[in-house]
Image 1 (tube, one colour):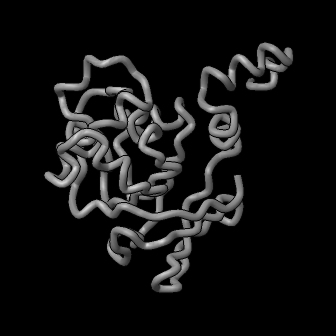
Image 2: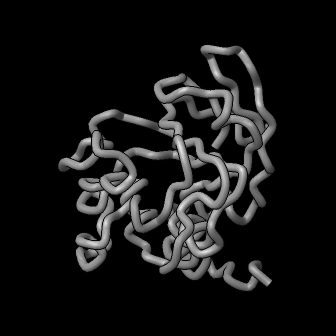
Image 3: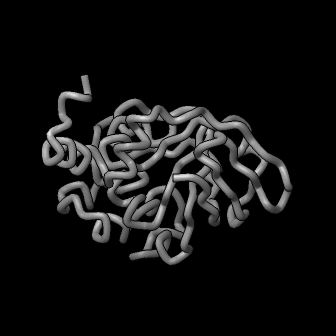
Amino acid sequence: MSTITGKVWVAKDYVMAYDIIIQNFWTSPIDPAENAKWVMAGVSEEFNRENAFTEQEFTFISAKHNFAGGGKSIEHVIAGLMGAGIKAVFAISFARLQFRNAINYGLPFVQCESLAEESVTGDLLSWDSENNTVTNARSGKTYSTASIPSFVSEIAQSGGLMPFIAEKIKNNTLHTLQ
């Protein structure tokens, strides 16, 4: 991974996991395409129709504190965000359960101060994961991000934890994880 450029959706307020994927869809199979159909339906009325968020073609989400908090560790949230085309989520802080799910699925959850406060939905962002920066094309401002540990980057590049482990087993390099 080096630089990814795309459109951002900026969360206006606290975003709970229960609103990213509403309860009606928690029993559906964990499938990115299926879970993406109702992403953010509980956050905003504009997304409360099938594929409404996905159709906007956002690449990033920018949020404030405790993104995806509020309870259960429902994996549908991460699968749905990925199915909707999200490549990274930037926030001041994240809910621990969903942060771990994001690692397991290979979706970068990256700490970044002020981005959500100083950006608007639709802004074009460029994220340089090697230099730990996000640049907003509209404002020209560059923000520092937390660095992503190398093992998390490796998991993301492999497509998630299970493909990462499978690759290690196949290459007889599982012992390198100690």
